[in-house]
Image (cartoon, rainbow, N blue to C red):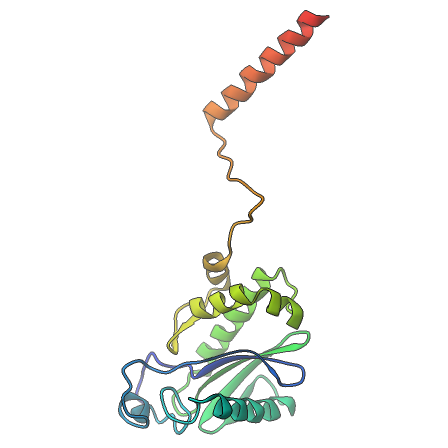
Length: 202
């Protein structure tokens, strides 16, 4: 029987058309004192899995991203095994959204649903224009969407509308207008007074 855990995400990446990092979030279970022991070792995630040594420094992360890009660039669908990881991808105009999980214990359907939800939430937040320039300009919202989707490697939400709803900020130039009976009566009485004044002027 496979060990089950909520910690199912190793990394969330967005790479550009040259394989360069646009966004990278690496996750590790909290309270992991010694790499390669405890929960992560039980999961069989292997080196570089959640909470394990191998992806803790920028140099290791860049090397990992390069190997992921080489794997993804060859094509072959949206799911790529790169032991001890499984890589799921979703491409946009000039960006590739990548979700990484442990190969031994991952549920690819759940990972795919999570990646799709994050991609669609970013699309909603950026009004359908998922390009590198727009993502960099709205990076604050993209990072918040990532945090609303995944926390410490745990999937929090797989509904794109819910993610975007929690992240989106109200526009600065709009004010909330409440229309009720009192508002309508005030508008009617104002209109009536103006109309009587006009009639009186004739």
